[in-house]
Image (cartoon, rainbow, N blue to C red):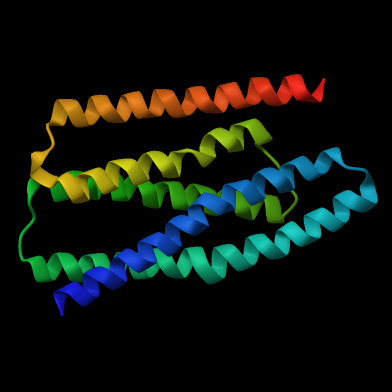
Length: 177
């Protein structure tokens, strides 16, 4: 029974991350629609609103809830709470905080409030990747990972990821000139 719950948990984690990875892209495109002339802008915003609602409420939210329910069930069946799992749960809590932050941004955009630039949303888009790397490394490597190497590797990954976002912005700005 445990393996079926674990497999189902992983399936919903993958579905949830699919939503977390694609949602900020939709928010970026919705933000950038402001650069288009009025009839196109209105059509894009209407289409993005439909896509945002469907992805968020039909895929991301149900997957986040089922991930939590199945994860707690899996943890209960394990019967113990090893150190690696405590650290993983810290990152999982951060991932849910990220999820809720996206929920707030989605609510704002659906009401026509655009507080963040597309560049800020591009940076925010990468946060899910950071959580994914940390959580998967902890789940797979478990107790074999040194805290120093784990934190150092994660910091290096964040630096590389943010550098890539910055380089992309520079290249994109040069192409638009």
